[in-house]
Image (cartoon, rainbow, N blue to C red; front, top):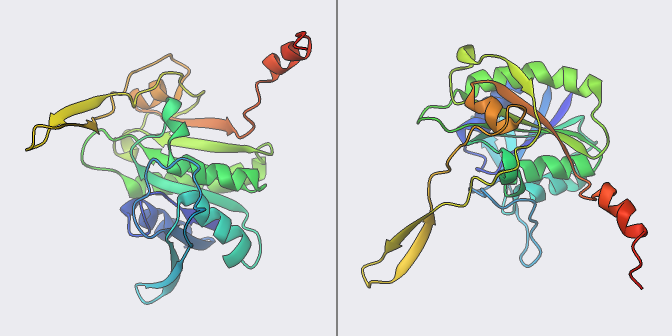
Length: 251
């Protein structure tokens, strides 16, 4: 299977390296990732400056591509400039930190998977909840390898990608898999207010407070040490409201 692999943490990040090492043993994997961290850029693309591609020899064996742009840029360049034929699968990750709830909208990892999906490629985003300083990238990479063939054979609906979030525990301590919906609350709204040496106030986003949420959500599943798998639609149309608006006398 041909797999296009990217992330939002840069091509040197341990998560993407673990996934690349695991998948390339059985698949044809092309790694195309930002040349530096591009976290929380959502589905942004680069319009006002040139995109540059650097080809890098990894361990003297593999050629990978480092891109100056965003994760979505990486997928666009991969699909339309670098790949000689369309991949069977796009994978973004493994991200060190969960992408659940409303935060999916901010995620560069999810943005890359969404870019694959809107171009008709089966796609998934993979993240690990940050519970401590250790991430079982190798364990989650092995899990993803098991999912790859099954999800490709299943054929996700057009314009839908799979958002996978693993708990921040060793893979052997994971309690199972939950098929979930996106939680509705926003967990990225906390700031640390500080003062600089010139007595001017400034703000940092502070640690994300992970709340349990409702039992069928991605946030709750991960908090209970389950792997969450959520199908995410790219079409943002609210079809219920669409039908109602058609009957509204606006003129």
